[in-house]
Image (cartoon, rainbow, N blue to C red; front, side, top):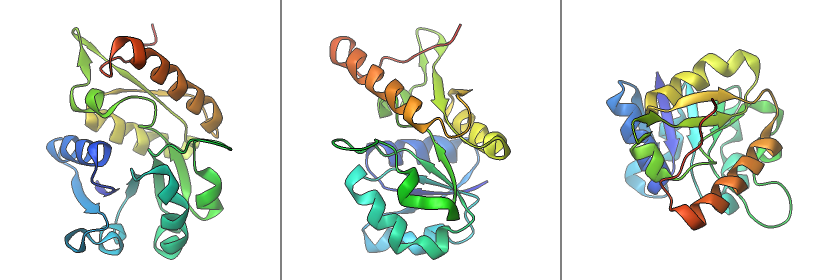
Length: 177
C-alpha cells in the first residue's frame, strides 16, 4: 500500500519506519523541502496525519484538493477548547479515520509488552476498516474498531492513556480481553 505520512516527529517517523518494514511504500511529507507534502500525497492510498494538533486545520485547508477522496488517518491531538480530533477540519471531502492518537510513540516502536501485543482503538467508516486495520497491523498492533464516527469516544481513550502514562510511564498500553 502507498502511504503518505505527514509529519516526521516521533509519531510520524515511528509509524513510517514500522510500515516500511512491513512492506508498505512510505512517502513522508513535512516542512522540509526534501519531504514535500504535495508530492507525498500524490498516489497515496492512505494518509497518516501526525503533525501538531494546532497545524492540522491549516494542513487540511492547504491540501484539500489533493486530499479529496483519500483515506485520512488522523493521529494528531488538539488540546484546549473543542474536540481533540480533527474530523471537522477535514470535512466530508475525505474518508476520515481516527487512530494512533491514544498510545505513545514508544508503543508504536515496540508494540509487544510483556509478550502481549498491544491493542489500538480506532474509529472509521465500515468501508475503510480493512485498510485501517492493515495499517494498524502493519505497525504490529492489534486493531480494535470502536465504530464509525466514534472520534469523541476515542479521544476519551487518549485521556485515559495520558492518565495511566503519568503514573506508569509511556510504555503503557491497553488490551481488550
